[in-house]
Image (cartoon, rainbow, N blue to C red; front, top):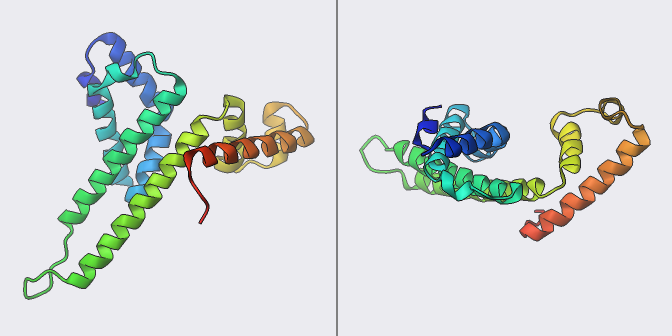
Length: 186
């Protein structure tokens, strides 16, 4: 966590540490969605945290939604830059030393698709972070942790019918937030 040293005062270090604790898994998922490589995703999170630490004052006084949106933007842009850098490093060369134009075109198309996918994930993350905490928690239990309705009912100490109704409302609200982001299903 050397990036923490890039934050100025102790208050900014506290802000950066809080951001890391709260958003690290979402940052990793977003970076991995773009980079498709664990090591590169970890590098992207570290680089993102360094940028956040350098600009910690921008996060002072922000709401959770504003912070989530900023973290999402920083992460997406850092992962995209890292992906482009990695692709330049891996440029394929044919045996006579010329660049293989077919392979380069394929790589460019792949880059564009990953960037589009990453941007879509960034919008979904922003929409998810705008949900009330209780809806996010329900969706995390069901969709990320893959708990059954019965297991969720036990965790939250509510009935299975209540889980069903609350998840329905959470999904409806999430769909509304996604529309606000301008994300449309393919």
